[in-house]
Each structure stands twice: as C-alpha cells, then as structure tokens.
Length: 455
Image 1: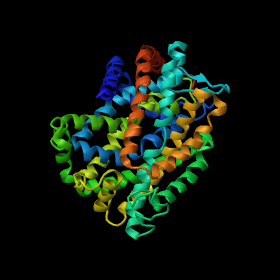
Image 2: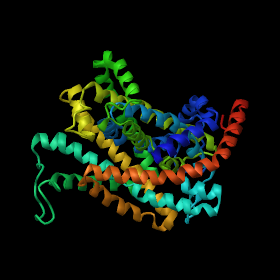
Image 3: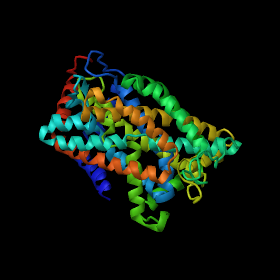
Image 4: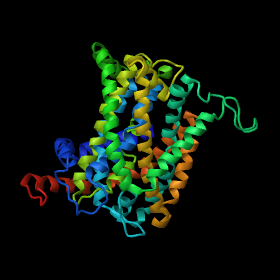
C-alpha cells in the first residue's frame, strides 16, 4: 500500500501539476524520437532512439510476459486495470524524471557526464540531500540485478524445451545430498545459467554504447514478433474481446477473482506488477535517458513518457488478453512464464511456445544488458568511476544465482528493492517538479515560435 500511494499518488500529482501538458505534446515526442531534432554535437553518449531502446530493453521483457501472468494468477483480471492506472500516471512520472535526468546532469570522478536520480538529487537539491542519492544507489545495486530475468528464462527453457524432450531432466543430481535435495538445484538450470553468464558478459563490458547499439537492433524486431503472435491469438478469439475488457474493469473494483477474493490483493498486485513492468518512478529509466545526446531536457522527457504507453498499455494488455482468452490464467498449477507458454501453445499450436522462447530469450538478455548499465552507474556514484566495472563481476554472478533460485524469493527481493529505489526518486522529483514545469513552458513557447536552431 505505501508503494501504491507513492507511485500512483505521485504520478497523479505530476499529471495534475503539469496540467496535462506532456500528454498534449505526445506527437512531438514521437517526432523527437524519429531523429528530427538530433544534434550529434550535443553532450551525451547515445541518441534519443537508442536511449528509448535501452530503457525498453529493460522494461519490455519479463514484466510484460511473466509479470502479467503473476498479476493474473494472484490478483485476477482486475489487476490488469490497476496496471493501466500505473501506466497512465506513469507517463507523467517518466516525463518529469527523464527531463530532470538531462536538466541536472552531473559528472563522475573521471569527468564524464552522468544522469539519473542520484545526480539530479545532488545537483538539483544540493549536497545536503546526498544521503537520499546514496540510498537510491545502494538499493539500485540489488534492484538492478538480473535475478528475475535469468530465473524466468531458465524456467521457460526447462519447461518447454528440456522437459518436453527429456533433455538433462528435472532431478539430475550433481552435488552430494548434503548440498541438494531432489527438488533442489537442477543440472539444466546450472548449465543455462552458465550460458547466460557468457552471453551477457560479451556485451555488458562494452558499456552503454554497445548496449544501446545492440538493443536498438534486437528490441524492435522482438517486440514485432511478440505482438504479431499475440495479435494472432486475439484475432482468433476476437468476439470475446469486449467481454474480457469488461471483466478486467468490473473485477478491478470487486476483487472476486483474486486469491482470497480481496480487493486489496487486486490493487496491490496490479500496482506492483505495473511498477515492475514500466518502472515509472523507480528511477532506472532516468539513468539511461541521462546519457542521451541533447541540450533540451524536455525533449528527453517527451521521449521517456512514450515507454509506459508502449510497455504497459500495449504489450501488457495484449499479453493479458492472450492469457484470458486461452483460459490458462485461472490454472492453479502453473505460474509466471509457464502460464504464458501454455497460452501460446494453446493459441498458436506447435510453433507458439518456440516463438515465445525466442522473444523471452531476447527480452531477458537485452534487459540484462541495460540493468548492468544501471548497476554500474550506481557503483560509479558510490565508489567512483575507477570502481564501477567491479559491479559487472557481481552482476554476472547474480545471473547464475537467479537461474537456480525459486521465483517467490526472486520476486520478493526485486519488488522490495524497487520500492526502496522509488522512495528517493519520487521525493527528489516532486521537490524539483516546479523546475520541470518552468522548463516545459519555456520549451513549448520556443517550439510554437519555431525558435530552435535545429529545426
């Protein structure tokens, strides 16, 4: 409930305080994203599209696939409505956080320009607020680990490929009985975890430029494949679409389909999964957008606010419809990514699970790419630029840990750390909100006059 109040209440504050100005210039954000206003000489490391792709690589992933399944399994269809709420108000939140990430960029100990909540808290509010920035960075060291992605990727490979074909098996014993039980570590999980470590290591040690380059190539293609597959399932059940939309809306205020029939379970699960999916107010998005090449903070805010619309309003909704239409959402024997895999197998026989595996593989790995960048920025702020690379060694270790850990432990850990990251992000953003509104009004005036050098 505190996270609900912080994220949704804070988002409503930004929405009302800005008087809906960012929403009214949504199309301009798309124009900025298209490259119309690119300035190759502007400070920063990546362009607007690469910044958006990097953040979408983190947000369009397991939160959209297994996160929606978890929300439905625990909170029922009504949880999806509350995910929509986080997206709508999250657009305002992302506009403010991403604008601030450019407006108050700082420099690290190597003299490189850096952006993110920890920097705009210190640069915008002053040194006396540094403990809040440190708190964010400490939580980010754990919250930005890839344990959820590696856990769910391992699960779908095991449940759809290895179990089906009998490869490696579920209960292979490779350690002595004092270290493992029959339901403990599996040889398949260990092997998959080691493979992921190698694949991710090849990219993350190249920094944000390599991450942005790879994400810009992989993410749009996989989003297209995933969306087309889900559209196929929806079109085959198109006559049921109005019924399920109404089911989502009505259940959001009754909670009849939630575990235990509690309305609080519906709301809290929708908010938690929505926050994990689009990350609005968590602060991660501001770290990536802070690296964008631009001299206009408001432009990056308009680009950043596109993320919840793409991530939650579009992709999460489509996933929810596929799970509802195939009837797998109320199966108590499956959870997370396995539920989505069964839905794909039901809706698109034979090839469905393999298309899902392909999408999950790319989504998970690209998310791991971006999260590694977030973690190095946190360590950079805490310990200096000369120490930031040490996070990547810890990071690849957590990939392996996530592969062999239970989903409940992983979800609780990441949810807790995201909540901790949201506290300083939202406090700092609300305190600096007047600066964002002032800059936005100035930008819109100049835009309407055509007073831009790069037009």
